[in-house]
Image (cartoon, rainbow, N blue to C red; front, top):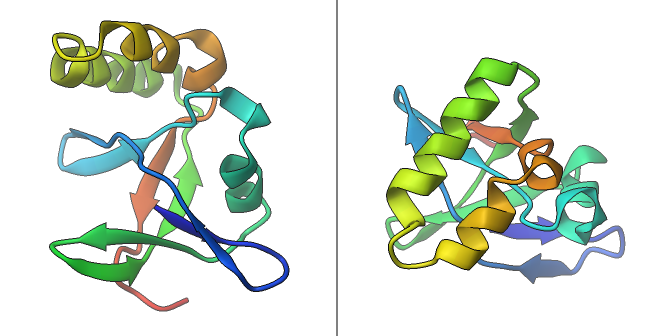
Amino acid sequence: MRVRHADGRWSARPIWVVVIDGAAYVRSAFGHRSGWYRRVLAKAATEIELGGAVVPVRLVPVDEPALVDRVSEGYRAKYVLSWPGPVQTITGPEAAATTMRLANVGEVS
């Protein structure tokens, strides 16, 4: 994912994506402390790489507890065998509170 800073430069970082019922979700593994997460909440331009192309995306916070739990289960199912430590972090309460759905993928806002 790439997020634009206030000064116009972009920063990139890998993110883990899970798909639940056809919708893609991401989280900040470091919760609200993460700079990219705070910039996204402040409506910074955000992009993802999809099929080799970089496309704009909007991230929408998720506040439905049952869905947040399903996203946590999605992370466990997809990543726990390869990355048990990081999965424990990204499914913990601090990270779970940052669950976001990818919306408007590829649409210019």
